[in-house]
Amino acid sequence: MSEKGVQVIDRTFDIIELLALEPQGLGVSDVARRLSLNKSTAHRILNAITDRGYLEKTADGVYSLGMQFVELTSRKLGSIELTTEAKPFLNELTAKLGQSSHLAILDGSDAVYIDKVEVTKNLRLYSQIGKRIPVYCSGLGKSLLLDTDNQTILAILRNCFMEQLTETTLLSPEAVLEEIKVGRMRGWTVDNEEHDKGIRCIAAPVYDYRGKIIAAISSAGPSSFFTAEKDEEYSQIICQTAKKISERMGFRILK
Image 1: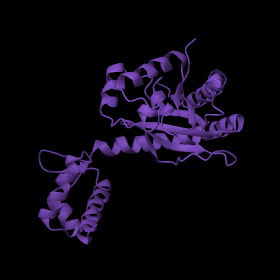
Image 2: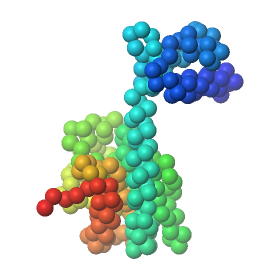
Image 3: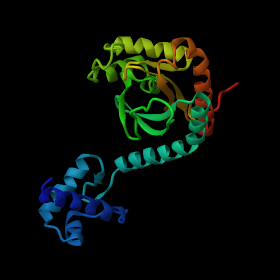
């Protein structure tokens, strides 16, 4: 990136940080004066930030922080709470099955890892916090979509570039949707070597106090361990772990 580009980024954050201290907002002239900017430069940057939803502009030209910051902050805070509550249960799941455990949230057409507990004695999985994995070829992704309506799921999947990653990767939105429908009935989903050859995964959703899916957990490892014959046994352990995390997030099953 050029020095000029870095300078624009610096000025953008200067403006955001200034407006964060001014709940009533500021006009272009005040922003330019406070930050020693050319008025036209300040106006251009303010408009660009506003277009992205991070600032709001009143009819009389006063700028203040926008709702996009509220959304991002609430998402971040929710993730921090979720990872804190889930960690002991991920440790427990890894100890029970002796395989790596993951926690992920949905972002568009991807599942995003926000925590993991690995084992060193086993096949090392190429996963890290922040890694994105397409929903169509992951147990986590399918679980994250279990409470989404079918038409929305198809729209998400049709927006994906469905790449043949392994011999068992599903390549049609309709086929993935059928897997999700099965997952709804049994409460858990599978990645049958669809993303990485030789790796199988069982996943289950995590619910919040509203009964909405906010995350998913999984246990993943060699297909020689996660055989189809063991799916029922291992899925119950994983679902029970997801239930414990859900309860910590305020979820209650009405009796």
